[in-house]
Image 1: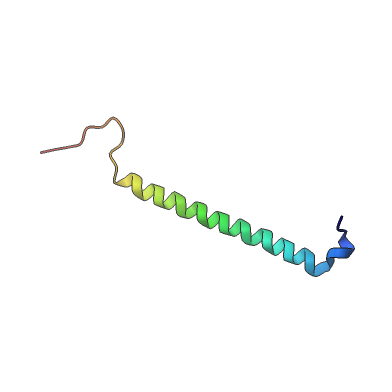
Image 2: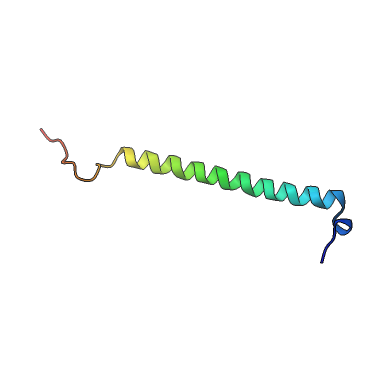
Length: 54
C-alpha cells in the first residue's frame, strides 16, 4: 500500500491534476452533447402536433 511518504508532494499534485483534467473533460463532453441534442430538437416536430401545411 502506498503511503503519503511514498507519493510525496509532487505525486499528490499529479493525481489531483489528473482528476481535475478528467472532470473538466467530462464537463466539456456533457455540455457539447446537450448543445447538439438541443439543436436537433429545434428541427423536429414535437410529438402529437400535426405539421402545418398550406
